Amino acid sequence: MTDASPLDAAERAVQVLGAGRLPEEWAATPLTVVMPTYNEAGNLPGMADALLTLPLPGLSLLVVDDSSPDGTGDIAEEHARRHAETSGRRRMSVLHRTEKDGLGRAYAAGMAHAVAEGAHYVLQMDADGSHPVAKVAELLGVALATDAGVVVGSRYVQGGTLSDAWGAHRKLLSRWANAYAGTILGTRVRDITGGFNLWRADAVRAVDLGSVDSAGYSFQVEMKYRAVGHGLDVMEVPIHFEDRTVGESKMNLMVQLESVVMPWKLRFRGAGASGGADGARGGRPGTRG
Image (tube, rainbow, N blue to C red; front, side):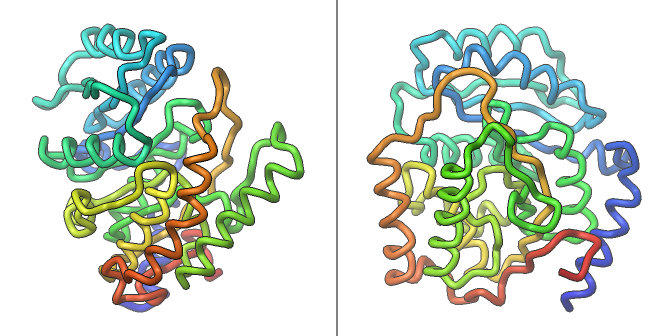
């Protein structure tokens, strides 16, 4: 497949989307949004309602709760009971884990569960409101139009932006972390650290979730690196990344240290990335760069 082919298909997908709507057949595609939570009681209800009112009848939400002491898991169960099934699939369900074991492991558990339950696509999405619900249909449309293994909601392609609530230091640190991991691993994925990623089910199987080492935020880097190594096409769609609306960030010192060390571990071990940087295609769908 040439560079022009998937980009042309993505351009057609964006044209078809119009006002955030997909063709009926595409909208019915079994898509599971996997949303890890820990103390997100203030954010989850709004996020769940926004997702489940999208014109995507094939969408379901899987909340992966790490025994949140603020009752997030109970709130998620209450919401799940209120949402009816669609096309034989539950619209919302909750996977309860017994302890806080890291964002990466929560995602791995949820993604494996979603694929086992029959999802054709799996979307990673944070519960804190930083990822735009309005972009979900576009990510799915681009994936279906291009047959990409991964579609990244990207802050660092043309048109991608960061919250105005972020200060200059935080924006610089975010860009540095992304460039740091991308340079060490030699990948052209421009938002390798981002967490708003849509995966085709067979791409999830290919990267072998059971062997992923990352427990924290570096899970995002390791997953994309593995995708590239398996020769999967990675498309990037520009998004606006908002600051969390309620609560505090879960980024602590141990998570930061893992994020610094993991790219070197992946580089020296290889992580099955025999495809190198050529396995990824970056750029805004509908453009040439």
